[in-house]
Length: 321
Image 1 (tube, rainbow, N blue to C red):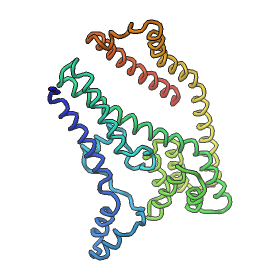
Image 2 (cartoon, helix red, strand yellow; image 1 turned 45 degrees about the horizontal axis):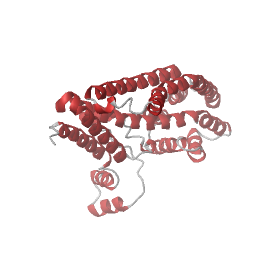
Image 3 (cartoon, rainbow, N blue to C red; image 1 turned 180 degrees about the vertical axis):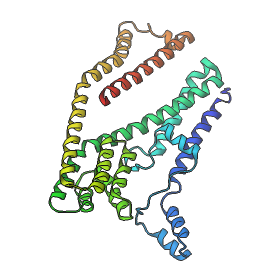
Image 4 (spheres, rainbow, N blue to C red; image 1 turned 90 degrees about the vertical axis):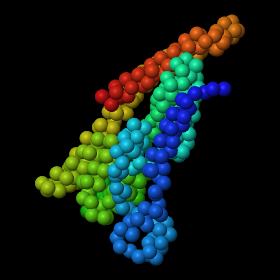
């Protein structure tokens, strides 16, 4: 069967995804440690000893200088600085994108030809990969957002007990649950190598996109320059953040009705199809046996998918607003 040159293009897209993932993860671990030790002028034996150790390094990885790779990462929605957010292994995500790309190409090749189906396969594979990565990051950021009031409350209590800010952050890294525990452990590690506290917390905002951590970073930066009661300042900020979290949860509860309506609109056509099949068997066989009917079904499912994405985007914007 002649399948045309389209699969080569789809395969090239898959290889590009694999290359980006390999560039992100292939140089991790021992090889990074060897390069760092060698750059510092340590001998070969000491470099091998450092590479053999399994102690994780708290040094920050330099951002990638490959613009094409950075663009690919941004397009697929991957967050290399937050590996703990990736509950689905990246090879599985890449394979899911490849499967979606090949399936889209195979189903549309007869409609638009191999050269027209290849871009559709690209878009389908990239959309699936981005959907999974963005879902994981939103899940991670949501859990981190809900724990902000408890983390700030713990910091305020530690400050009022007479502990310095560094010790208060260490208490958060020890006593809070994940993912806040992991993020503050990174903050403590960055402070230990000389990064200012406000900049270390700002990096949490860069990784998670949660505005409240930007508030905390700016507050600590201003307080270090102007002075004043740190406990009182943080307590006012904690009260503000607590109200923002409560408002976000209330907005999520109010959006539940819209979500239920959207779910009903999504499943109603499939319920109608099942009912029609039971009432009149073979009535819908035209959509599977006739090429024109199959094109109509593909167009209908595509429009339904666009409608689902639009509804989801509207609900999310309403919640964030």
